[in-house]
Image (cartoon, rainbow, N blue to C red; front, top):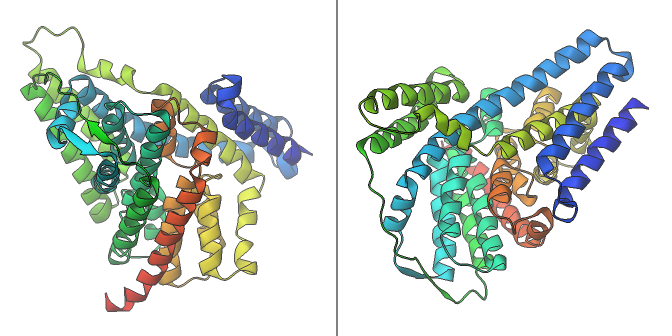
Length: 418
């Protein structure tokens, strides 16, 4: 009975996300409401006769996952908020871009840039910077949706081959299912799938775009210093995670605190109206609250045993086919608990199949706008980008995902050479 009620509430919550542009109720409000309600019901009427202590332990695990993601995103977004407000990122964009470019060329350029940047940075930063380019142009709504779609897919594809680029990649690596050398094999198929999507989306886009010349804002030495700290934090996150298993959230929080201290020292003699720590207030808190709500909902689904049912796919299908479907399912269900459930089930797969699974869970979330952090960020930045408008791109995304997954599986045959 309780399981049915919780699953019904989860279904209603996801339905309200889909029709957000019709009911005009912010998705952060609905997901947070239903997410907390599900857990309250679980305490009042415990599932399968569980004790309150057991439910509390399950909630604590869920809150820990949420807090880790929240703090990581807060740190990264604070860096970006500062650099954005100072015009640092905009200046770099305008210097890198030509004065005019064809719509087709920009599509490929955006795809490559988002792919590369997400490989050396976090997905949130890569998404924000890539979207800044699109938003600086006067584009039709349909074309803006196409560019945003490519950015979401490219960002998810770029981070899948690095343990700091995707949480599920890190989980699979720490479980000793794949090695760093194996993961690097995903770079080529991931890049090919991005180019394939760019080609499909740019069909019939024959116009020319012009970057308006704007007065370049003066970049202070403080801004350059903070940009260097940001890049150093990203690098340190990768190095410390690989060498010493330091959690990425810890390194990013350290980098953020270091930025605060350095900026305080550099700004001590300046007449500034805004303290460096105040830039935390410029973060998209709607996005962060949406994350909290979604993860609470997914956590409730996990506790009622829904996620464990997905592992039965491997009893019906061969791993290469089941992995493909699991990637698509990860667009509707958070890929972290989905991956955790699969690892816990101890499914028998060889390294080649685990490599394909890594690609599937990392990129499969691109199938739906709510399936990845990049999608949620893009939806909050581009008003025309809704669940339904993104769904219209699903055929292109499915083809690109299939190309990438096939390439990832074939790349696994190179493993004995490594």
